[in-house]
Image 1 (cartoon, rainbow, N blue to C red):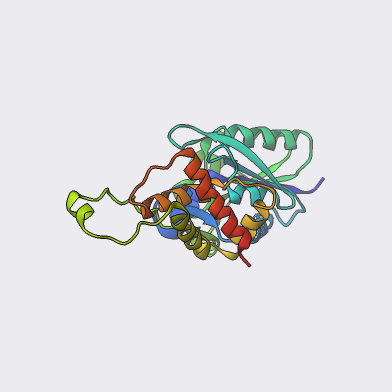
Image 2: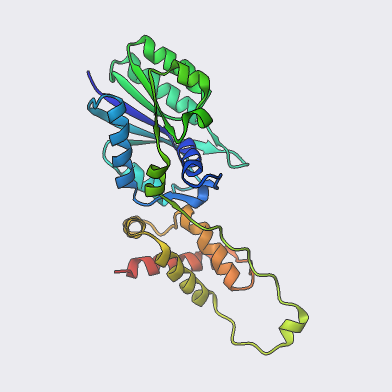
Length: 279
């Protein structure tokens, strides 16, 4: 059947894309899509053009969970039509593991079953070279779509094996990426002199959490707010991409206070309530 599939290595996509957009390496946790649905639509348009506009089977999105739960962005992507979320794991130093083997398995299975005639791979890893060769042996044309300049972030051997090599330019990532500022370090404990100085009444945990929640929601995109409201319609857990900032910023407001488990649940409850009350 004449159709194509898209294989996105999210770790590569965000890392190389941020490099293309900003000219520097940026921590993955600081990068997000402004609007996942619009970004995936635009991505599919470029990939489909490289595959000579064959009908799309689906997009495979390979990523790793940032913690015990999916991030809000991963949840949103998983719910998009014709998108299949595949998950690897993060090791103890934050490196994504198991993604390459998932791409290899899916690419070879689809080729062997004659499910596609073309494959568009958004990755630069040399480990995919053998899978490309096997897929081609089943008659599949394999195209590499680089994030930015292929010469700097796609293996030469992978380029040589591919039937074509294209690229997403820096302006694409500038349009679709949102880059967050790093969370400020928690305040240091007061000195004895500062402690002896009369001060205003300290904020309570609820007050600090409310201010932090308002700050996070004020900087969130319209799409993120919509995603959060949908997420909290069936869950009270805070997605990892908001949870870390919520706890860290609330702690900073309270002079670097360390929270107990009950206090962190209290803070998260304030955030969930704030999201649900947004118009």
